[in-house]
Length: 271
Image 1 (cartoon, one colour):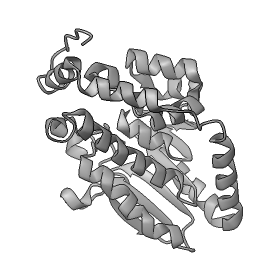
Image 2 (cartoon, rainbow, N blue to C red; image 1 turned 45 degrees about the vertical axis):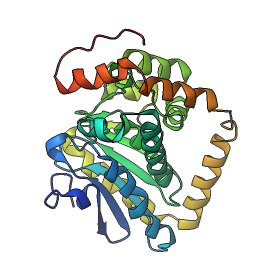
Image 3 (cartoon, one colour; image 1 turned 120 degrees about the vertical axis):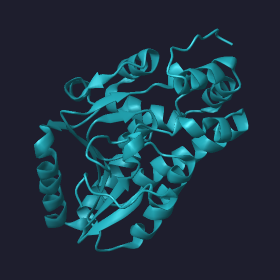
Image 4 (spheres, rainbow, N blue to C red; image 1 turned 180 degrees about the horizontal axis):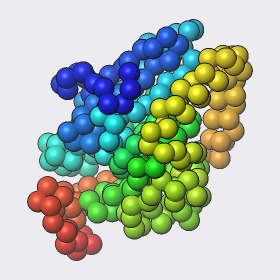
């Protein structure tokens, strides 16, 4: 299934799996909302991936957005008032996010993000949880948490730092600027950029490599690299988690969400 195909959208098809031989695709399926994920969609990712863990025939997972115009615009902000309006609700929401990220990171086969168009916020968190990020030249990237009065989840920040360095991570989080595909490649946020019409061909080429190479070798490589990369990531994150709760309890967060829904610039007060 290519990125411009998808079943009719409903609560239980965002996201969904598409199986093609030894390759499975995880399709983020809300093209009318740039494939933004509701809370139920984030929770669905680990549920979909769990049965794949014991699939001896699986060689790779490809993550992409339906419709061919967007990877993922992140969380569905329209539901924030209902599901992320208090610190406790936000903590639950972030835990569901992190479970989705970890489901991708711990799947014992290569996981590739095929990125077209916007890859924003939690959508970028999903891409960072993948082993490889292959983008078309239509892709652009941003973390708009600061425009909403939110704190980005520490697990996603750790993945961001690993990809781009602390200083580039700070720039992305401090400015909430959009980053082009070429600039994202330059700082290491993504691994490759291709012309829009060539992206699917490159993904297919990678899948052929995965199918031809020894499955146990790929599993060993992923497991070893993940263990070594996380060896220094055992820091106490309680201070970061406290700050995240403070953000959600703030007037600025309420203002950020209102401004987004009203399509205006937020007026933040620092409280």
